[in-house]
Image (cartoon, rainbow over all chains, first blue to last red; front, side):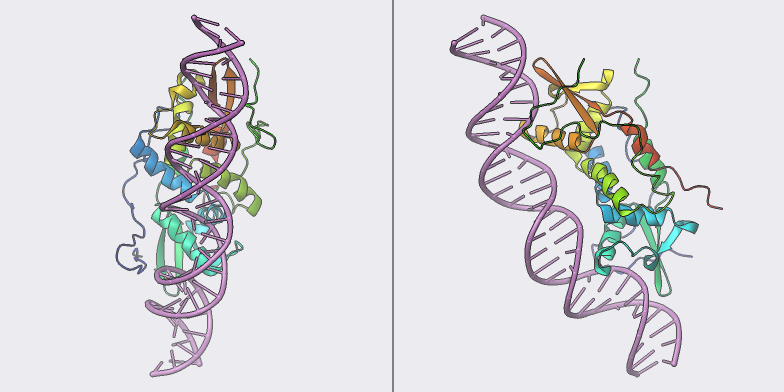
Length: 128
Length: 128
DNA sequence: TGCCTGTATCGACGTATGTCAATGCCTTCT
DNA sequence: AGAAGGCATTGACATACGTCGATACAGGCA
C-alpha cells in the first residue's frame, strides 16, 4: 500500500506537507498569531471555507475505514471536474491525501489534521 | 454595560447570530455535512481564511480581559479602512461582537465560538 | 488491441474578494 | 461651538475564485 502521486505535471504539488505532527500554530487564543503563522493557518481555513469543499472533507473524514473513493463522495451538486478541482485544493492545503488503487482514487484526511485544527480553538490560558 | 449596535445603515447586520450555544454543525468526522450545514460552517471558516482576518481574530481572542480596542490590534500591515472592513466580516460571520465605549470600540470573541469551532474537529466516533 | 469507466487537467467565463484613498459620523476635549 | 481623534462607509480597482464543457490520461475488460 504505497502512496502514489497523481500525475499533475511539473510544479503541481499533491500531498505536499505530508510531514510531522506539528500543529502549524499555537492556539488562536494563546497569543496573537504572527504574519507567517497566520499565512499557514489561513490557507487551511480558506480550503474549508467553501461549502462544497467542506462537504467533501466531511464526507472523507466521516467515511467508514477513514478513506473514501471519489465516486463515493461526488454527490455534492456540482460537476465532476469541479469535484476534482476542490479535492485538489484540499490536497494542496495539506488537509487530504490521495492514493490510486486500480481504477479508483481514494482520499483520506491527512494525519493529525483534525487534532491540529482542533487545538487552534483551545481556550485562552486561564484569564487571571 | 450594554451591547451597542454600530450604526451601519439599514440591512447591515452587526453582531448577528448572538443566539444560543448550538455548535452549528456536528463534528466534520461524524457524518457527511448536509448542504445547509456546510453553508453555515463554511461561512465561518471563510472568515478565518484570510491571514489578516485570522491575525485580527487571534489578537482579539488572546487579548487580556477577553476584549481588545481596535487601536490595540491594528498593527497588521494594512490600512485602517481595511482593518475595519475585516472586522466587519468577522462580525457578520458571527465570530466577533463589538461594543462602543466612548471614543473606542471594543471587540471580543462571540460566546462559545471557540468551543463550537473546536468540536467540529472532534475525531470520528471510534472506527470499529 | 480497442473500448469503456473513473478521474484529472485545460481554457474560459462571471462573480466575489482584498485593498486603498477619500470621506463621513460620533465622541471628547478645549 | 469648534477642533481633533477614532472608527466606519463609499467607490474604484486588480486579482482570485468557483464553475462548467471539452478533453486528456490511466486502468480494467472484452
